[in-house]
Image 1 (tube, rainbow, N blue to C red):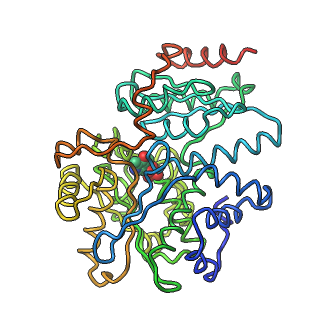
Image 2 (cartoon, rainbow, N blue to C red):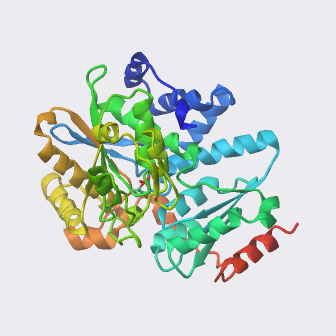
Length: 422
Ligand SMILES: *Cc1c(COP(=O)(O)O)cnc(C)c1O
């Protein structure tokens, strides 16, 4: 799929500066699926899916922040999940089919997917989450919905949830349930994640073909993959900064050409980025002519020179992340949350290392809302971050109980079979 990425002309990209987000989004998504969906339908999907603000602020000199935290679950995952949900729903209508989405989450994905598919009755969603490792708010984003959404808390880690999901996908006796995934390597989730690169670019450049630097807080590398696709489509990007927390497998790989996953992954305060072996790495290798398998074994080394030219990566410790939150507030009187802070801190390292590029504009993504991390923010800068309405209403809702205690795969399979008997 990735070997036929469509190109946009420089003129088309230049014309984006006079368009609003939805029009840009329509043009880009149509490049991928325009042959199999009407323009009118696509417009309706994009209008419904991406109906929230994407603010961009100039922070200092040539450095901007793009806020991807204004969707219903206040994480950038709303872009991919909401667009994917509506595209899937459309094609299921056309084919008169029903499916079940199984997904495992470490926190943010589950909420975004659950909210995105809520009340789409051709699609059942079962989300597995590690019950002792998600925040109250993250859990409530999944457990307060009901209807076609079932969230099941598992005693264990994210990896245990993922194993259950993988076993179900490989189980022939569940074929009749039409299982599908909505995980971050899904192409339908990656395409919407190119949109805000084009949008952000179009809002900050002055000249045609001007190059921009993007700093991308990275965990499973879906966001970065979206950016790399945008670049291959023709967006003039000087460099990507892949900003990771203490899970530093990717910057180490870029430096040495040797890949070693971080196992078990390290718990950092930017918890949506605690990934020791990103599943989108396979996509990135693919984009640069390499091949890596699920276990992290490299079968073909990608073009390292090209990759290093396009992407730099920095690992930011929790200490440095906290410093970034404090400094950002002291300097600019604005609150940045841990994931965005990793991106901002990495940008500072880049600026220090490449002063000759100081006249090139940069855009750092803020990927979550600060109010999702109140304890940390209060501890660091003594301010209670304001909670957006979409999170406030969830806080007060009551939760649906676990439908079944699931200890092992047999329990999970039993649950799926019982639930789909009719
Ligand atoms: C998922 C997530 C990330 C990491 O994005 P990837 O696409 O997995 O690299 C960063 N920040 C937040 C808030 C997230 O939810």
